[in-house]
Length: 324
Length: 278
Image 1 (cartoon, rainbow over the protein chains, first blue to last red):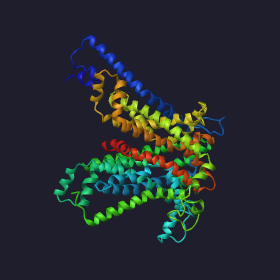
Image 2: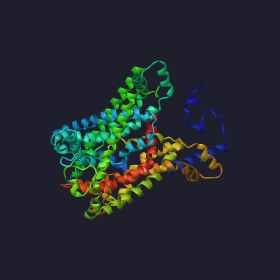
Image 3: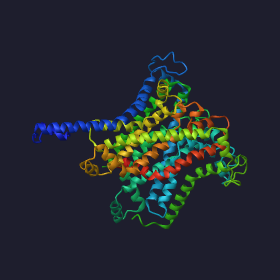
Image 4: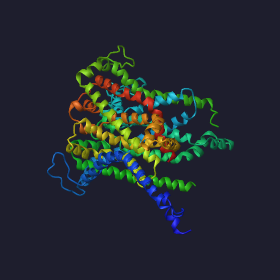
């Protein structure tokens, strides 16, 4: 075959191998395709304009602020400072505490979310009476914003009149009430418990959908071969849905890293920065008016997440390659 | 086989599912119960798990001590307008993205997906400055514009999935019968898509109703505040009045729960469709 046919593919109306068309037909096609172009442009334009003006423009403007001295309280001096904002951040010992907090926040929330969500999904796969109602009920927390979840848990973790202390002392687990949100050690635990509670549903939904994508005959074959339940789970079900699981975890890591709402409502980052993660810190700095430093932090977040995602996706690919 | 289950396994399953149900509903129960206790009962030992007296005192004092009615009105107005406009605009873009092949299609979809990944907080400062220049700071119309932009990417992706499930033949038949493309969309496709469109609207509405950080940055005057912005003010004060706070939380949560009960099935569909296929 000549190069002719291969280069022309993908353009259905001008395929080189097609019989030649009369001039009359070409004009009709052209007017059809310009009308088609107009429809596409007219239907896409409002969405594109809104997203470009109110999302992309401010994000790009924010990125260049990271390299400038940009403070609402001192607008006479908005010079370019190169990496000055980044240097200031890296020189601040708080940054390393907060970076560590962010990692703890993500890892310690996602592991129990995944385990409980997986168990729920496995048990919800089997049909039972009221399964639909049950799913609807455990789905309810999702209707609530992270900020309000934070308020609910702030009240439950209240040191004096909080219900969690009351339940723990009724169960005989503690002697004296714990001032959960006022102590550095326990405050992080409290926000992570709230986040875990909120995030389990997401994993349950995603994993259940993945489980339902496994065809029944795979299980039948396994049963015929005498595979037990646990063995089937680990050598058939999990490998079958591993890609979906891995991508769900990645999406969740990115999302939790960027999720300040619960912490904002429960502790505001306190006590003594012990529950600040990068995004809550960034918002606090934005509210002080130091847009330069806040933007620099934002770029640091993007960089961390990009590098993490790249390594993570590479690791998945390698593992898949090794298996097959 | 899946269908055989040992009795012990069944007990474990039922106990676990029951326990999780209690855990996931308890915080909602607790805030509801708190809101109906008298302020005295909220702050007294021992804690009661069922109020001795059901009182509306917290709700009354919430409306008396703050302009909560105004906040509710603002939230309703902003969320309704923004969600309606955003859903309409997303419907158009989702239709094109589901039905046509064009060169920049991949780039557009990517641009929409990326907005869901990047921390939006990097845009807070620049958005504030932009709104200052447009004279739209502390203005509900300005907040609506931003919310519309925030809603569009996800609802476009969600609606595109629903459009893809509707056979082409439907609108082709309508166009052969003399409908224009616009006419085919509005007279034939949209009526079939109704559940998906309602779900997208509810999702957008709930997101706008709940949004906090943008409105905290942009809205200062009390008369312009939405509910979350006002609650953020409540928790920043030195002592929190948990009586009014619980009443406010209940009034914020209940409408979204009712809406979600209608739409949850479609939202789950929209969420999982992309993920499992990918």
